[in-house]
Length: 149
Image 1 (cartoon, rainbow, N blue to C red):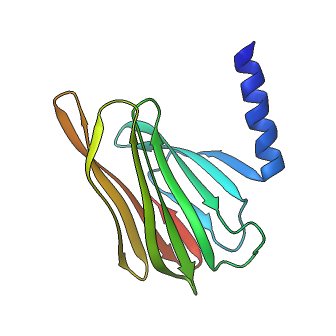
Image 2: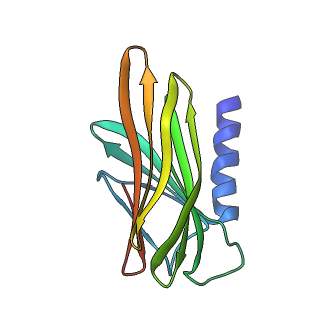
Image 3: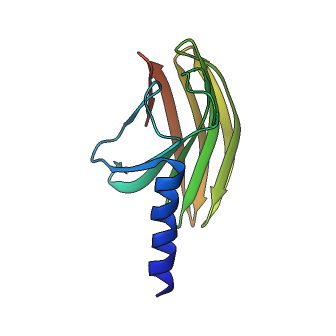
């Protein structure tokens, strides 16, 4: 019964906040910078594993594409990475404020980098048991679209 109440709150909050849940079977999300909801969530397959991608428009009152977005990638019960990307004139001007959380294991060597006017990423080494995997969230901007892998 409690699960039904939580699901109802999430769905109701999604409509109030203007979020959008999309289930995609690709490895990339394309987010329209000119026409989007305040919060958009996607379920993707990444290297055979299911991950959630969430993009949040941090500028609640501005309807222009020039603003800051929070990009998050999450593997349920394992890890979560998020960072902020500032976009102006269809270019990434900064990437910062990385958050690397491990529900299991730990992160090391984590970084957020703006590579060029069109590319930024956050990555870290996630160690769980004896294995270490590099987890990366890559963001690109092309033709007023924010793409996340």
